[in-house]
Length: 288
Ligand code: DGT
Ligand code: MG
Ligand code: MG
Image (cartoon, rainbow, N blue to C red):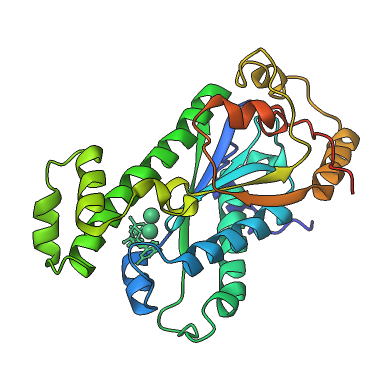
C-alpha cells in the first residue's frame, strides 16, 4: 500500500484480539423488543412465529460461520459459541461480534415475510440487535453459562405464562397480576396455573420451557465414562492447527446438518452424547 502522510492515523486503531484458549460466546439481543413485539402484535407471553424466526436466523448464522460449535436462543437473544482453538478473524472481538450481529439481522429481516406474511416490516420499526463477546476459560464454565441462560428461560417462562394467564384469562390488570405473583415460588405458580386455568406447566411446549439449541448433527454417541466436560479442555488449541487442517475441519463441518432442538442442556447427557460440540472434532455423519 502506498505510503501517504495520512498513514499515521492507523495507529489510532486499537487491537481487540480476544485471549487465546478460551471459549468465546457472542450474545446478541433484540433492541427494544418490548416495543417491537407490541408493534407487530407478538402473542403473549410466547409467539411461536417470532421464536421460529429467531431460530431460522440462528441456523443461517451457523451455516455462514462453520467455526461456530453451538448456539442457544431464548426470547429475543441468542448466544453463539466458538471453540477455544478458533482463529476466525484472528479472534478480533469487533469483527466477530459485528459479523454475527449483521448476519443475524440480515437473515431475520430476510425471513420475516415467511413467518409474518400479514405484517410487513415498517421502515420506522425495523428489528435491530446489539452484541457482545464474553470469554469463558473452561468447558465447565461455558456449560454453566449455557445452563444459566436455560434456567433463566425456564424461570421467565413460568412467570410470564402465569402472569399472562392471570391477565388474559383471569381478568386481572397487569398490576393486580404482578401483585398476585409477588413472593411466589415455582410450585405456587404451577398451582395457580393448574387450579385456576387447568394448565399443567409440564405440558407446555418444549420450545417455550427450554429455549432452542442449534448445533451440527452427527451420529449420537454412547456416553463415555469420563464426564462430558473433562476431555475437551485438553484439545483447546494449545497445539495450533495448520491452515490445511483447519480448512479440512471446516469442510467437514459444512457437510453436517444444522439442527434446532428444544432439549435440556444443563444435565450431562446432552454433552456426553454429542462430544463433538465441546471437543471440536467432527463426529460421524449419519448414513444418507
Ligand atoms: P433491550 O434489550 O434493553 O433493548 O430492551 P428489550 O425491550 O428488548 O428487553 P429485553 O431484551 O430484556 O426483553 C425482551 C422483550 O422482548 C420482552 O419485553 C418481551 C419481548 N419478547 C420476546 N419474545 C417475545 C414473544 O415471543 N412474545 C412477546 N409478546 N414478547 C416477546
Ligand atoms: Mg432485548
Ligand atoms: Mg432480551
